[in-house]
Length: 237
Image: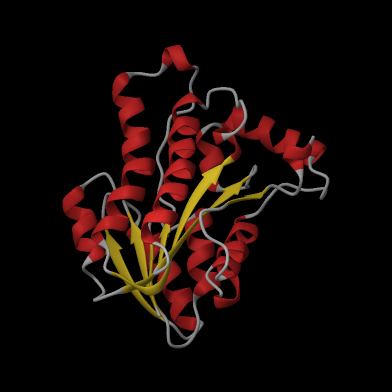
């Protein structure tokens, strides 16, 4: 099984790489800047019996995506995890920041899926967040990008069926390093999640990774075009 994971050097992407690592599998660990972190993830993948390929590439670059897609002759699992975004009020976002957000999250979901040679029975998995469905302060750009990912999930699921299944995992507040870039907002989000989540805690990257693992299981073959919310029940409040 050949697996491609974008943005796999840290956070949710790294957790997915570790979760999917097993003997007989080959995993492409894509990263943008931190080669050392990507190599550390690759070492964990190899320790679990899988082969690991570390590939640098910017998902905003069509040339880089073409190179990523060509690493394997065919792809069995494609996980679109990489995303860069801006957390600002809608009227404070600069045009370049808006474009950066959509070019790093929404466009690769379409373009890399098209570029990869997806094998029969392959799975394409997108990653989204609750800001796609609910108001989150400062989340206008990323919320729009992730809502696009969810819409494209439904379109691709029909157009690629029955040969390929397409689903997206929509996570709640997940405790990752990304929250450190917005210390005040990140702290508030974690506090709110811990207060409102019926399951009693904030989400962890492994929670999302385990759901991705379930989605690619052959027993989930009847699931396609779905956006699965993994937030510990927080959205029910």
